Length: 398
Image 1 (cartoon, rainbow, N blue to C red):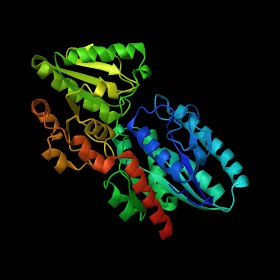
Image 2 (image 1 turned 90 degrees about the vertical axis):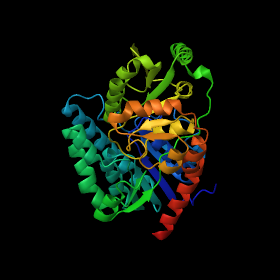
Image 3 (image 1 turned 180 degrees about the horizontal axis):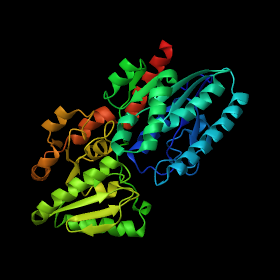
Image 4 (image 1 turned 60 degrees about the vertical axis):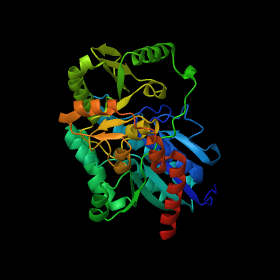
């Protein structure tokens, strides 16, 4: 892999703690961190600078990891004034580092990547400091149109920040927008007249991890799931409970599970923010360090997502483990559905027909080619190489 000339510098501004990959958004950001630090000298702004996987960040290209944000400013906060206080602190910190970088960086071509709409204002601060002595491009790693999502979430503060980022700052300053699917391409390309790059989501090919990574409680849970598998068919769901579409999907699963108690089916729900408990034929596991150890016991995955953005990472991950999936059209957005339908890997349904599709999927055993099909499109390493070629093409067009 050939590194670009040292005149290039990439700056990644992330709202994620990258030391614990426990959500789809973090997986996508981690992909770009590995992609960018493989080929470019890289500077990273992240809420935590500890224990970041050295296999993800190429150390020979890493300039520095700077801790500048006090965490995700929108989660677990009840009062808007707390959110505002954190945003003010973030802005002060970025002004401080913008001044510092302006003194130390000169004559480079700089790419500033913001991994969320909430980070667009911070990227703009650095842009204004760095553009005096360098050629700077702002790049938005989008996975959603945040204004639309903020309206659905009925969050006034998020809506204000999304409007500021996507309707005011983005049209004036953002040079490129990277989307996971063609959804939103028309909006950003035709309305905002921006260059749109499509780079889909990806997950690394799941490998069986050493069980030492699981604590004693988790090992006990895995053993119990393995025991349940001898008596029941296992239908699984994975997702961060803080993400509203996941919360609504779990409600649909709980509703349909009542009608399947006599069918020897056990639902297993795993993910961040989920309390550990068992209710009838639903086993809530909570967060598990090595989720592959749980997922490999699933007979079917059930992801009845009502809405969301981009290709679902949980969908790609499950298919790479050869697990058939029952889901809505949202679940399979951006996925090559025709091939997967033909192989019996996916079952598309609406919420009202969820029970029938789960039973249909459990009766089928035609899933041998799911991993092979999905890897053609979403293999992590191949996608990194393809994405690099896309970047090079865009750079040469400038």
